[in-house]
Image (cartoon, rainbow, N blue to C red; front, side, top):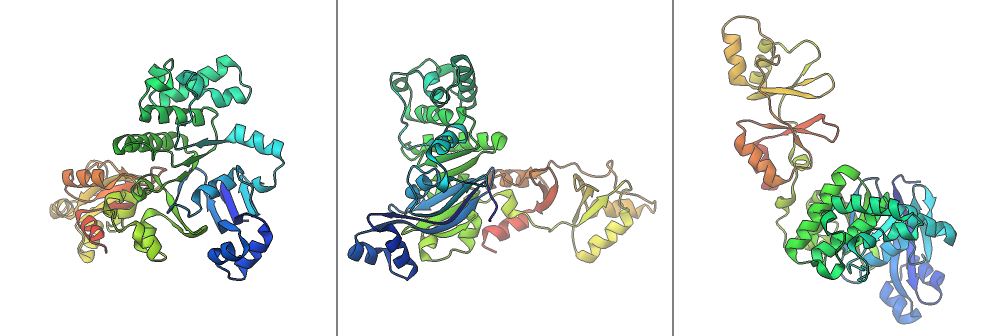
Length: 398
């Protein structure tokens, strides 16, 4: 079985009579329009398979009627599948008895809707704690847990207010807090920010991105906004006519769209704005290892001259960045005729930038730095470099 926190296999949803007959006709090559015209069955989702990794934000996109909202309701079984399987942590949700399914939803699965769905007569605190109340958690504990998540979304000082006293963005924060309060490992968000104005929508995206840095929940996020998808999504799945047309990182979809339908989503977007350090990095700077003995300056100088390179990076034996040095500085060391090694006292310290740093901040760092900048992965290990030349080349489409 394919691995992942969530694994969807050959999933179908047919609305109408004779579901299996409609599925068989799809497999024979009938179009959904023909099945509707001749059999009266509506194809909601057709043979969808994909997986979502733990800690990933997976964005589902598509035009109205493409099947994305039906698909997420099949995943948590608010809609019963006609055929196929949905595995969450290896457990087949599509086959679970009702009692176990309800328990799974209460314990480990939350949903955030476009409509805030808050209870007007309850305080912000009581709304945030509602899922815990349904799960049978005592008042003291549920209020403590609800206050913790309200603080995370910046609403702890509004705990005793009522929904009508809050702005739309603040109400959606309460909805998010309610989803987080049960501490689920996965959240499904259906057009969660689309009712907000652009500024509030971006603010909520920032909240979600910031929360994800520390909590790393698995999130399926339905959106019709390609800029939102590119900003928050680790990967994007694009649907058309009930089918999943293509899945990939934002940059993979931009660089290699499966068809014109996928390509058209990006036509009006300056996709370069959504580049990150990880997408810009390259192995363009020679790397030397300090494994208890610092690299010899003469040897490094000769190698840089042979490669026509002007900078070198030094890492330790664990691939942690130690520092940078220019060919000009190494040449000055070598000129005096004394043996020198590239240890800490001659290396320039540069703060590494994380792979997820957005383009705007990458540019700021490059402007302030004379040479290339090292990039580190999630574990803090060196994984590449960004230079001004590399940035210009990448933005020109090379």
